[in-house]
Image 1 (tube, rainbow, N blue to C red):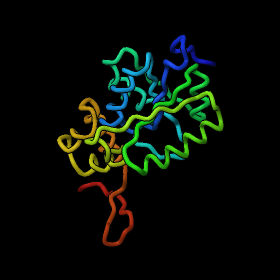
Image 2: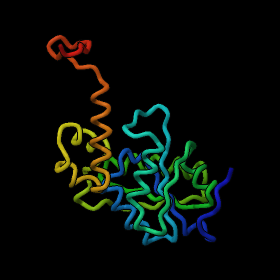
Image 3: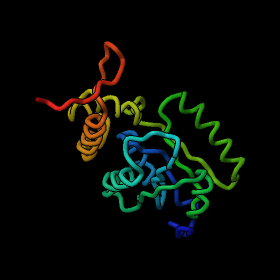
Length: 193
């Protein structure tokens, strides 16, 4: 079922896509700045069945909505199709992307050319990440959270996400069998006497 257009002018609606697992302060920086450039900004959470994620798509949507709640012109949705198909389906014509490093630029350049081939009417707009977030990624956040605590996450994620991230990691770690690293094999859990 097609979604309603977010703006009468499709070039005034931008879509910022990613897996956002979890949303980082770098993502939030792009969202804050992008919402000032466009009448409406959609945070599009892509669903990739082959990608292992920390949070389910429903959880990512809920967490992202909490983060963007202060911004009335920002909404959060999920999609499971090509980005250009999704952008076209919701009546937008702009993809917003954040750039952190030269490596990002190489990848994004290829994606932009592909998207232009798929739909020449959709434009891609890039925002350079603030320097303090240029190294922050969702996978880095998961690693820091796994071995650090609440204070170690503060420089990387919005504060309202710290507790959900730690709770999710704690739950996933408690369901994993302990590992005997000397033998590199899983040890069966035995009840305490």
